[in-house]
Amino acid sequence: MSGNNRIVWISTDDPPESFPNIEQAMREPDGLLAAGGDLSSSRLLAAYRLGIFPWFDQGQPILWWSPDPRCVLVPGDFHVSRRLGRELSRSDATINFNTCFSEVVHSCAEPRIAQQGTWITAEMIAAFERLHEQGWAHSVEVWQENALVGGLYGLAIGKVFFGESMFSRQSNASKYALLALSSYLKKSGFALIDCQVISQHLTTLGATLMPRRAFAHLLETACKSIARFDSWPAQAVPARDLTSI
Image 1 (cartoon, rainbow, N blue to C red):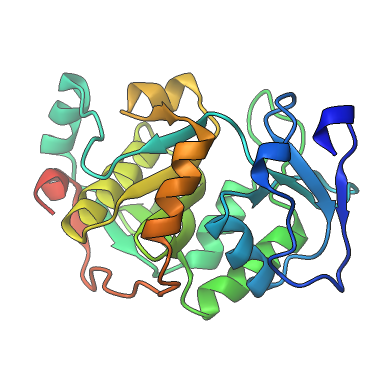
Image 2 (tube, rainbow, N blue to C red):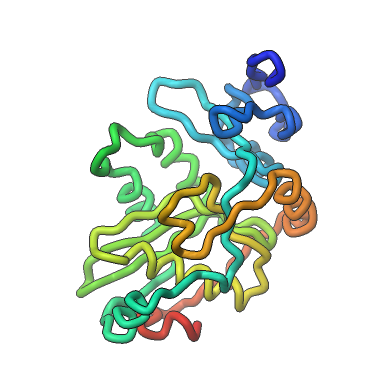
């Protein structure tokens, strides 16, 4: 257990919800809780509803995490700076939802500057593609002149969106994607966007920290009904209209 620096091992034969209590997670590093198991849809859905997510590198066993505190963004609380507002007002980019999920995930998995490798392994990609096919995983895509220039993906369970990763090939493209998601989820009555681990970039966009216990309590209510969300915009949204979605 975490008290003596031992990690719980999960067998692939264990039921999907067989995770230790999140209060057993190690404080360092970043709430490591358990290892093993698999990336079946049922186990992933159970994990996220408990405030747990997988994060591991190629060649490692599956590692399960539950950080304390948790980085979150309340839908509608995205901070639009004056500079970003000016760029939005003159942008001709458009935003779509769920039109090229696999391409977004593969783009998020591409190597980045000052980063060796990626935690979005082939196994993770396959798992989230299955979740997308089942109606749980979703993507937001930013387009410029028919080219995909940014986006993000994650899971929608009940009234919580669990963000996984985002990417940009053009300045501020991932911000456009997160703003579109935040604005639309506010309109749709979502309680929270889970951003997992805090970063300075997320903080500047309006993300805050929530104690793990409070986060888990919120999930008990907001994810009590394990329902799919499928009321995404069917038409492209102009970036300049994002704040009025």
